[in-house]
Amino acid sequence: NDIAKMDKILITGGLGLVGSHLAEAFNEMGKKVLVVDDLTTGRIENLKHVPKIDIRIENIDDEKSKLEIRKGRASFRSA
Image (cartoon, rainbow, N blue to C red; front, side):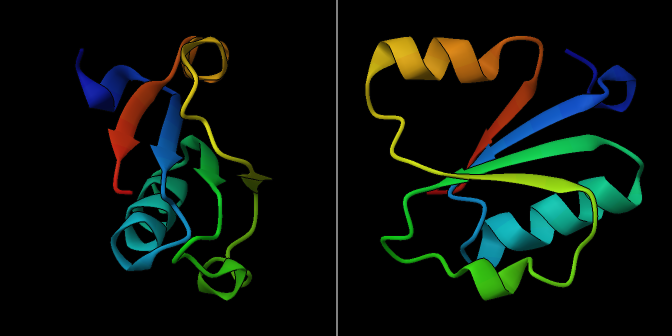
């Protein structure tokens, strides 16, 4: 998949240090960013200042959740 052509981005662990920077960069590129994080080590404050990012606080360890959330999105795992 060519990331430049994809409009939707999923970042798991996106409230951590690396994930939040990825989310911010994709947001600045005009991508629709979904961040999923269970707050084990991530902090909501890392993206509080960034507009238009969808944040879901949940654990997506089970396959059903992963498949549902990943639909149509380029995925990055930073957890």
